[in-house]
Amino acid sequence: MNDLKIEQLDRKKFLRTAGSTALFAFLGIGMIGCGDSTSAMEDNIVDKTPDDGDGGGSGISISNNGNTITIDLTASDVTALNNIGGWLLINGANTLVLNVGDSVMRAFTSVCTHSGCSDSWQFSNSLFECTCHGSRFNTSGEVVRGPANRDLAEFSVSRNDDIVRIIK
Image (cartoon, rainbow, N blue to C red; front, side):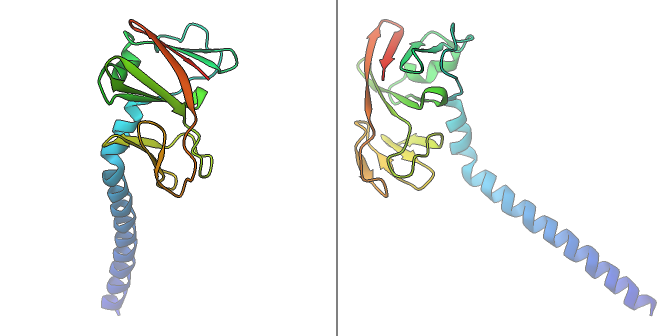
């Protein structure tokens, strides 16, 4: 009888441990699978709200109800934009900014034309991908893979040395 109790306790402990292990393994796989892109993506996300004033040290200020974005490329939070292929997602202004080279910056809405997701983006191999449903857009904002069927709206960008101004 004692053996039966030990077996039941061991079985319960096993199931509890196995369930926890399976859950952690599942979460671990999810974090490893997204780890590289998530951490890379987080480096490219700037959470700003419109009318931030001086930018709070981020190098980004948003004014005119979110319609004008000014980026100081010397600020540490925006260093990604100093390299060709460097990009930022500015959540508070729903804007993607990309350095396409030769001192040229492009800016697009970050609101995906498929389902309106605006804060789940990755950029690699010269393609923006909305990670909500997998739509991909090239560096001109054109759809290259659906389910989106419309291009991203592009904004006016001007650059004067280290200051980039985006007008929506």
